[in-house]
Length: 125
Image (tube, rainbow, N blue to C red; front, side, top):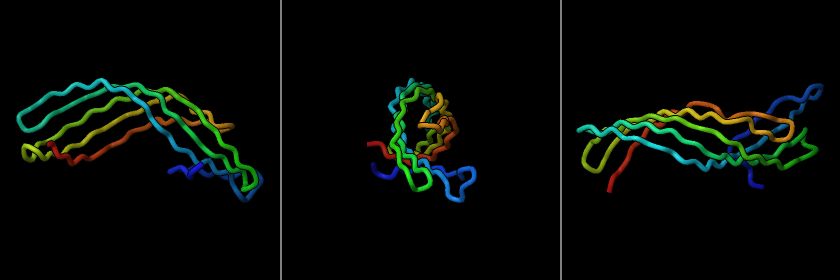
C-alpha cells in the first residue's frame, strides 16, 4: 500500500514509541446545487450526500502492520460566491461543512467532520 497523505500518531501507554495510523479517504458524493446569478457574478449553495472509502495502515510500535478499510456515509453543506473579473476570468470563495458517521479502523474510531474554506480562481471557455 502506498503511504497515505495524512497520519495520526499517539503514544502507547507504557511505551516511549507510539502507534501510527496512516489513512487516506476517497469520497464519492452527489450534490444538489442552486445558483443565484447577479450582474457581476453569482452566489450558490449546495447540499450533498456521499460514501467515503477510508483505507489505512496501523503500525504498532514498529512491530506489527495491519491494513484496514471502512466505508462511511456522510452529508455536506456548502455555500460560496464568485465575482466575474472578465467574461472568462472569475475569483471566488467557498465554505463547506462535512458530517460523517464514525470510521472504524481496527481499534481506532474517528469521523471526518469539519469545516473547509476554499479560494477559487477560474477560467471559463
